[in-house]
Image 1 (tube, one colour):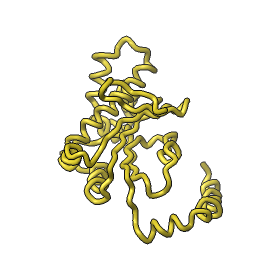
Image 2: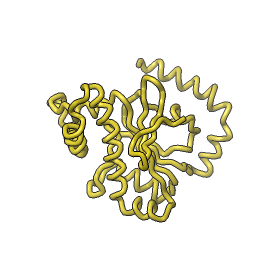
Image 3: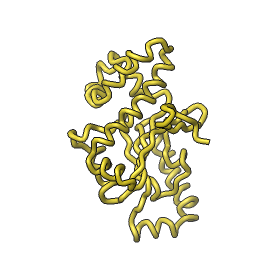
Image 4: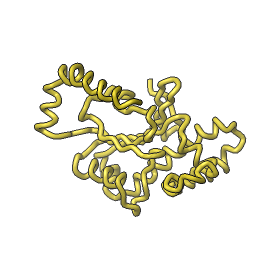
Length: 206
C-alpha cells in the first residue's frame, strides 16, 4: 500500500469518523482506557478485531502476534506483559483468543520446512509444537486444507490452556471475575465460531 494512500486515509478518518465522534476521543483522552475485553489474535492483516466485533475505540485491548500465541507463563515478553497489564491494571472481564482460517502460522507448524529461512518465526512457533503432534495423531486422514483448519482450532485451545497457567488469570477465573473464550474467524464467510466446552466443538455465533 503506497504511503500516499495511508496519508489520505488519515485525512478521511479525521474529517469523518473522528469529527463525528470527537466527544468520545476527548473522553478517552481525559479519562483513559477502560476496555472490558482483552482480544488476542493473529498479526494477519485480514483479521481486524474492531471491524469483526463492531467495537468502538477503547472497548478492546488488542494483542497481536504470529499465530495468536499465548507464551508460557515462564517466558517473559511483550505478549505476556500485555496480558498482565490487561488483567492486573485494566481489570478486563473477558479474554478472547481468536484464530482464523488459512492461517500461515498454522501451515508453517504443519510444514516446518517452509520456515527454513525464517529463524525468528521458527523459534516463536516452537511454543505451539504440540499442535503439530495433535494433528498428526488425530487428523492425519484429513485433506491438507482441512488439517490447517483443525490446527487453527487446536491452537486456540492450546493457547487457552496457556492462559490458565498465568496465576493472576487462574485466580480470577476461579472467582468468576474473568471469562475466557476461544474463537475462530472464517475469512471467506465472515462467520465467527466460539468454542463450546460442554460439547467440545466450535459453534457459529448467531
